[in-house]
Length: 311
Image 1 (spheres, one colour):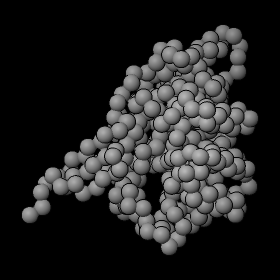
Image 2 (cartoon, helix red, strand yellow):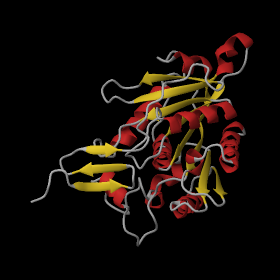
Image 3 (cartoon, helix red, strand yellow):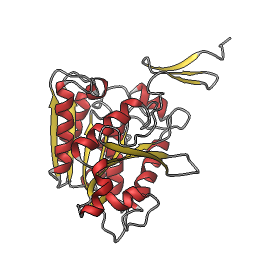
């Protein structure tokens, strides 16, 4: 007889799912409050959808609070999607709160860090649906009359960027593909300039088994021909809805090959934008999140900031 407490799936030391439906998470479950002028950056939490519970944390440099009075220009807007295999993480845990705070301070941007629903309680495509709903919510501010005053006052909607790490990098790709088919703000001043995929979670080359984690979070996947995890088979790859893409890899990352495959697939597609590949030597998956004060993590943060500001 099978025990109801039997573990049916284990995601490293981070998560366990049990036969009786329970899910236990052991990483990034902490919640830190938004900051009021903390480290040169202020943040607040906002509700995006009452129906699904999708929310976000918004970050602005403290200097922007006085931007209108000083006649300063509005700032680039970054929409960020956290990683965690679609199963763990949130904008509200210390790791991601601190990372986005540092990036906002370095790049002098406005950021919206999205809290999408997690699997297995909410199987994929819930994460994609929530992320698209968040982008639509962000775009609703383009005329300066949206529900969030910080976006109305301080965000430049002609300089919008998407970024994410690991599963969040996968989400970024899928959002950029979708924006190539559907306009977020028809007839308005909205431009998705660039996308940054940090150590993105995609499938391996053909002939390999489909990732066990992907099958767990997306039970309805068709396998290696699922374009959400294998962009090389997606004919929409040539119609990305942005003009620049930055792909970040790490030398010792198990996902490095997948990042390189994505880079090559994008170069061979009909997309006429600019794609750049940056690799950090001697580092592993999302090293910058686990050791943010290291020399290479600080340098990596500057790369992300430069990508946004030089576009």
